[in-house]
Image (cartoon, rainbow, N blue to C red; front, side, top):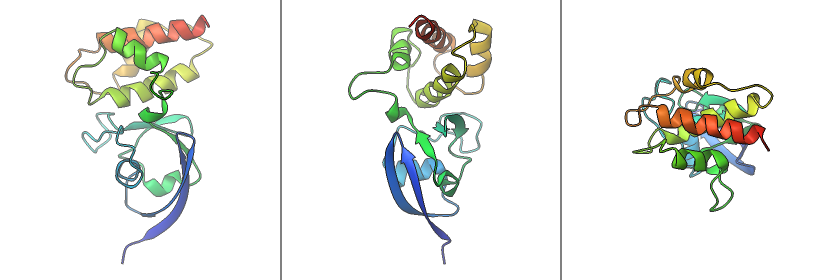
Length: 161
């Protein structure tokens, strides 16, 4: 017999009620049960960061969190960044600075950067800080420089608003 739990979770501002198996990961719950396929699974060991989402505003590796742990929480996925068809400023900066190639790791980088930018509104961001931030996720295509430039450009633009 499976250990099933009824939970409620808000994803990108939309409420969901569902029953999930206790051992089902947040990543699998988001992708397979709720249809948020922007959350990618890479290593499934918490190393690569492709599955990074925001759980109550904090970045987490969705492959390491159980879906039942999100009960009563707010989850934000990459699908929650854009405003309809209009890209967020961070997504647009990734495009402008060629910060993506194959795109597999991009959702994780976007969500990690979004959390960082929300936390550092009052401080001066440096390339060194952002380089340290993006080192937490893996990308096999870009060489990271475009990602660093995109996050730095977004940080500067947000501070000048």
